[in-house]
Image (cartoon, rainbow, N blue to C red; front, side, top):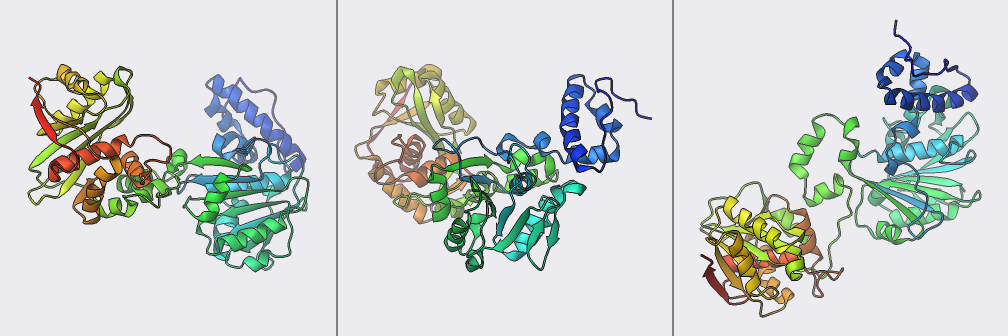
Length: 470
């Protein structure tokens, strides 16, 4: 017989009476915290009756991550109208939406002060409504304790709770079905995949007209659709975000290792695993499809390797420094081997990082721009290792002009990325005629341009001068 943990108060009454159960779960939550502090958490779980354990495991407030709980305010301050939950595959988005609906229907804090009687459930298709939102592993039927569980009426496409709350299901494939019904709240799942997103979403907005403060939750893997971008920019939208790895404890043990090894850092991986909305600058010289088409796992034999450095303009104070390693094969194809750039670094730090890359890749030269740092660039590199041959280059044309011939090589398939380089590729895809939208210098891209130029476009970006520091 399991001995009762000494950290527990007198026994908690656990019955099938919903009124008692509502009191029991918060007590169990407090007891667990007390037991954990006394290193008796396992004893508590072993001491619970099957009924008490079932209630305990359905306590969402105990197991939810902060990003899975309703935010306090919208982006613009004050009450939010839309809670936009963006995340990677398997990040727990469905559970977040289902628990929010459960909390509303039952009037549980912090979701609602009293039960919400009319709720809309909108899925991409009617099949998704049934198999994901309602019957799924993290769907509405699965997450409720027995006595609170709603009944699904398939013919009427609606859920009915014991307390009288109703949730009506809709498919985004039929926007007109949303014309007429009215609701106090709505849960929209995978909005970025809806075929008729604008039409279905607009019809839903007209129906959110009951109660004192109608709200909607949207759970979706992000895609840069016009509707999703408008919602992100809306000041009355509250944003939550979670990558797939945040939910690793609830995923198959080999899933992350298998999927991450294949897709980590790629455009698809950043969207589907990291839950990041990937956008291209329409005026950008470089397109993401260029990187995806050029990506390889391993470089061939290379006849020359260089490390290119775009030093920060901050002088002794340091700053962002672009460091990119590239090589070329006997056919003149270029291979990007590493992005070793630093966000903030003093001169001695970035110089050491550049020389480390030079040594690890057995490079033939280190190419450094000297427009900003002048002779300081050579001297700081020489102070780390005077034996490294440094080619100094000075830009004579603007960044966009210097990058154009490199972009042409990408378009011709003559530049390959050996693996994913997320930060570098983000910067390249955001670089347009006016530079980066945030006004920052494209240091990673500059370093790449210098590397490619030195390898196959000698003389295109400024006269190089080779200097051995020893």
